[in-house]
Image 1: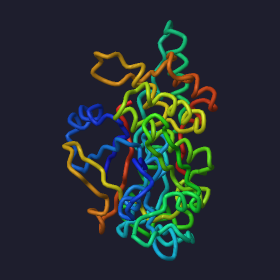
Image 2: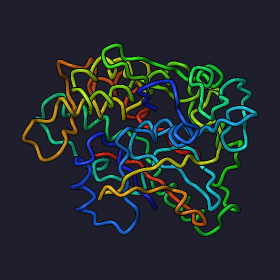
Image 3: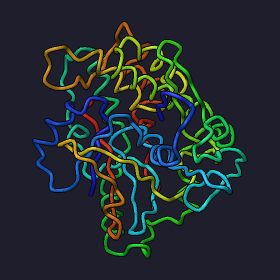
Length: 116
Length: 222
């Protein structure tokens, strides 16, 4: 997840890109919640430093541009923290947005490929 | 079926999508987020998602038909590196018939299919993610952002670190290499991804160092 600032990051933005939702009980994804006191601020934004610390997410900073990059969680030690499929917004061939949740109710075989 | 191209430049994926003229959703992942979110480290790989939006199989190599390259006779007199590349490709694990049959079984039987895993099994069978791999993912993402907003030169040090931290992630490496090794006037990305002056590795030498073609993919455990 790329962040221009660590301030004023919304729960929606975090959930959309990382799959983790900040709740009063902690950082949650699917059926699991990791206690993270302070991650959900009173103003409804996410304290990225707290979140990164609790979930074992690397947080990198590019000194030239001031941009941050938040890596994936290592809390479970596996690539998947939960079997609940993430639902980021993709673009299709024509640049239109698409979410896998639009196919809920159907089996989905998601196949990754590349031009290289 | 849904396909997703892990290409930082969506225009590189367009010709292939247009040629296939698919009737299924054909998506493009310009940030390689699917690596973070689903565990893709090479292509082709796939995950299976049930009707409730739960994964029933983690990311695995997703070949459904035997490649003709496996059975080809390697011509005599090829350049040494090309000859060796073909020999390594012929060593890729081959379970395409079994994997295709497993997909069909799941399509017909759903949760009752022996190939549909429990939620705990899906998580446990997903690839390990140590701190180094997570940092590699953050490095790669920083690089792709800088590629898009600053320059390829700005991305290089981040991508070099990603490659060093997570050498088993072929999408990080092949994406970066092809941007260097593909001639400016080419109509398709270079697939050989040979030695270059920007990144330490290249496809053939890294495949050999990683255990050869036999170790190149995450083989489905069926």
